[in-house]
Image (cartoon, rainbow, N blue to C red; front, side):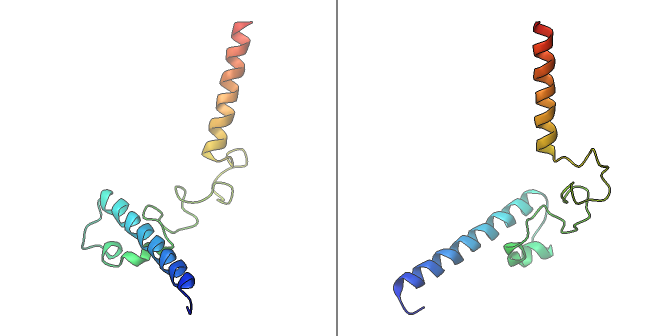
Length: 99
């Protein structure tokens, strides 16, 4: 960190990280965690972890449906993909009803 540009870049990066951690703590407090919880006492835990993510890769709610063994083959679509295909089917039915 010999020059001012490098110092400014590092300072901006650290500020961005601190803001992200602050936002995750705010989300955690909104969902019922108190000052006695470890996540609030040690806010830097949220530097690389989101407040509403349990951290278990096999969790049904938090994991990617394509990588989770619990889902069957046809259910491996993400929620967004299922909505997209459902909207396409609805549009197709609407078009067929007009004819």
